[in-house]
Image (tube, rainbow, N blue to C red; front, top):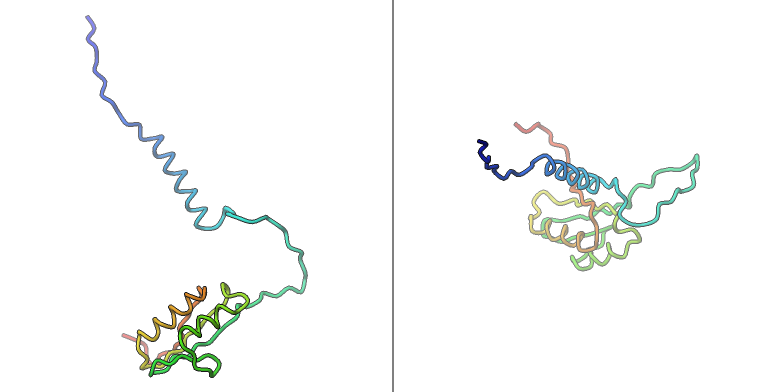
Length: 135
């Protein structure tokens, strides 16, 4: 006489691993911009004398009293945002902030916020090399 075997329900893990692998690959490719998300694919004309254009650079000076200046002109944070937003290629503009040694961090954060509000994503801080290595 044969007895009926009671089979327990199982979750098949192999198909779930396959799906997770495909999702992982998809998100990695999207993150690395391997999959174009918009626009038409075109091939630009080539030239033997092409040169890479450096991004437009803006040097912002932050003094100890918190005043901000660009090219010798003292600006408020709102004026700095307007000046940067008026640039032709603000997304590729590189801003370097040269702060005084005793400048307050709040002034630095205010300048960085003004740059971000204008659409600038490349913000750097200027510093001098240390005379002695840190230990």
